[in-house]
Image (cartoon, rainbow, N blue to C red; front, top):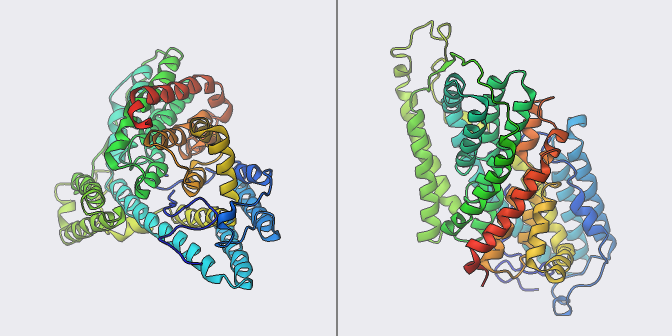
Length: 503
């Protein structure tokens, strides 16, 4: 077998498959419920052979014991991921183990047939794509953690709490902020920040907290859908080069519709009450605004490297990490200025946050390493199943049998049950022949489909833990019809305003 530019046999040319995968800036525990659904879908498909022209290039293992064993391993691994809350076994461990065993099985079978080089090239390609995306996410996580360490998000939260807005005003303010912050940060960080405001103001008013949390989840997911940096799925599609950077912003109007429709319906159910304002004060630490500016400069560098120099965006992101490292060196050398003008009793006077010398490796260490390694497991597991041939079968059923539009709408519905990371990675691995409009559609649906259920996105799962007892699965489910109206409206809006991309 000859390996041509990353085109792996048996999986519909998955040459540029990516895996990244939320929050972006790190999903917390519990955010992957019922993720074994794709395995069930694959398992019930008939084990038919792939196209005859590929027979000489790869081994069809879809009806082989190795294929069945790989499916079983993937299934068991996701059962353990689902049970993380009860077993306290971190989600990265079972999928990493499953990935190693799956590729070990593939390697053993291929080597026994004298085709070990084919399996080696396939797994190396998976590993290279994962490395690019992992490093990209690591830089983004580092910047977000640095801004959190400089108390940027605490200051925003405190300002909102002490502003004295009514419940209905806060409902819209937190939703709109979530919509516009998530394209730059990530939907998880944004949702947690806005939920902290809702909990601080809402108090014992469970009705307001529930509605505001639902609104935040929908807004954060919708806001991430129109930006290449807003969600892992959009980042995957951008880095693969299927859709260029600026084309994603054509999803802005559909994303706005996706947020506004359910928000307008829920507005009338929000209590028309004005709570008592808080006097909490939070002062950002020195360098906070400059770190925000450096993060924007890093994004600009990544975009420029990709668009103008045709280099991988991760090179620009790593260059931007150097900006933060050099600025961190400056902050450390001038740490004595952090205490200038800050009284020793600042904490007691309500000005939260004592000055701390900045160390760039502290936010690096605080990255969501469990999530990053979980992405590795997902990439290698799904890549292995694709190399075996199962994803080609699913692609044939969905994109050939159903048609691209129905398949892409179904992807969004599936992502309400299953995390959108493995779903989008599977689609990229299938690499169906679609127009730019259809790729934008699947990007939109995979991003906003998770809003249909509270367990459909990292933001929803995290808020169920943060607002435990107030924001619940069934509380969210009650408003799923309104969210579904927004989901359908956003799809129809996209097909109307971006019709030129479907040709």
